[in-house]
Each structure stands twice: as structure tokens, then as C-alpha cells.
Length: 166
Image (cartoon, one colour):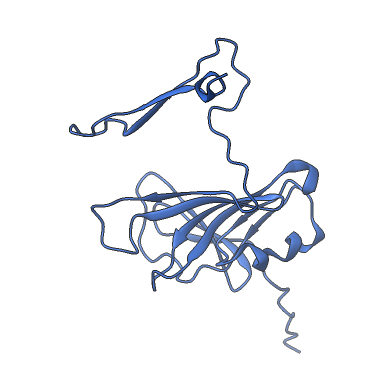
């Protein structure tokens, strides 16, 4: 039986117009439920490179590391990828991690299950975002910056010692 009977139909299309697909996949079946694309590999990943950008801008990958799905962006030196966000499958903990350079830095999410780990911001926001707020961590404290620029500490990193004025 030819290999084409096992795969969905695909074809290369010219990308002469803006926002036209370079590759289109049309599922041959009519019931759904099957994967349209499947990669069986010891370290599967898909890399996206925007060719009209100066490297490292426009380079991203979606990768699988054990029980974690990662979205990574090319680092400043353009010699590796930094982790942007990690999703852990529910049976392994169901955690989400944001902001660490490597997935291993999440340290198994502190033993938590169903948690969100957020790294300290490398630079806290200084400008306001019209119509939206910004959630970030600074020195371990969870903070929110409103569209007006008001910063609220949602969770302190450590308790402040009380001072007696006796």
C-alpha cells in the first residue's frame, strides 16, 4: 500500500501573497480525533523562523521535554533557546511555569500540583498598559500594575517585622 494512504493530504503552496500558507494540511478522514501532524522523536520540537527578522528575533520553538511542553525563544547570543513558558501534563502535576530561562529551573514546581510558577521579572514594568494590567513578580512578591500605574502587592515575599514605638 502506498505511503500516501496513511497520511493526510498535503501540498506546498507559493507564499506570494501576505498571510497565505506555505504548507496546508487537509485531514483525509471525516471523523476527526486523529492527529494531523505527529512527530515521534526522542526530543521532538518544531522550530519557527521568521525570515525577515534579524536573528535572534523571530526564532521560536515548541518542544517536548519529558512531561513538559515548552514554548521557547532564541536567546540574545543566538546560540540556544530560552524557555518562555512550560506546561506540565495533568497526570505529572498540571503545572504552568513562566519566565525561567530553562525548564529545569522550575525545580519540579516546589512539589506543587496545579500551580503556576512565575520567575522574578528581569525588569519590572515602568510604563502603563492602556486597557490592561500587568501581573509580575519582583523580589519574590506578586504584584499588579494597573492601567493608571498604581502598583498593588498581591502577595508579599516575606512578612515585615513589626516595630514597637515604645
